[in-house]
Length: 418
Picture 1 (cartoon, rainbow, N blue to C red):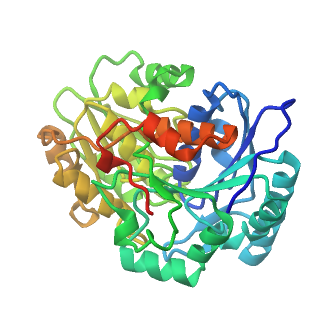
Picture 2: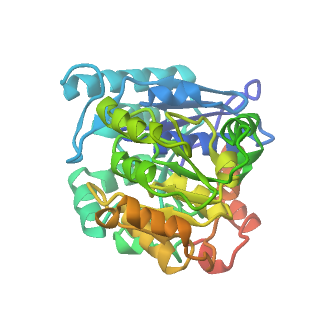
């Protein structure tokens, strides 16, 4: 649907980034990464993050960026939602969040809204905001999809049931896929190409390596390195809500000779499970446990080995670093992590250990004898292309010009779903 940017020359362009944030830090961290890249544009946009992760305030924000934190959902093991803290009435929470989002959008008056992964928002909380922005007719609306959502049959069924395809056609100007179709072609596998009516484009995976140079990254690296000269193995499990098994295996696993372990449990791990992990760690002189690291990538870059679950952001970090990497992917309720990790392992880019094979012994064996990592790297130019796509939108430049200007890999790497 055609829209016209008519923002006054007296103010900077405004970008709103929405994420629903129900499990871990993944959606928040992806939006922070995108916000950081967009803040570098010479257009100097004002950027507002809106999402449901209270930990947002602990992360460093890019210039001209602020955030609104919604009261939070929690995702249960069966995939359903409940309030993280505010009682048990998820309908009331959804209505509350919907009103907040709509009010924020009206007050901020964005020129561009980028929605992360869920077209209608969690519990359809974006419906009224999308309708209001569409009626007003000035704001461009973009859906950003990670490279893998779930098994294709599940995705098709869910998107049809939730009327996501209809929502994209009605309200969204573009769909950006933060992935490489040579690794996984979500448009064909999930039957999205024709349904998106030419709106979808692969941007490439999002390379987080630029964050290594931030002040916070240097602080966290120095904190973890400390005064202990021993090389370290770094393990992280995102928010930690479903990472207890990996954490327990890690604190019980033998480290390589002369090495120590650094474990980041996340802030969402249930207290009883975290206490068990801490108890095992306290019995060792080669194990450090931290609940949270604001900017872990520089500390990860200094590690001799990397271990983690297979969320999008952690995987991108592993792909840009030199240390051997082991991923223990989540397999339920979504198969996203195991689907992505299987493909990367087949290329020789990471090692994979399935949850049913995880134990202190199997983990320790890999730590001592990690598989060499070699293989064809996927397209990691997603942030560069996102910058140019946003520049084209905000300056009313034809989108194709932005695509061609930053079409660094071969022609098969950037495919329009026409």
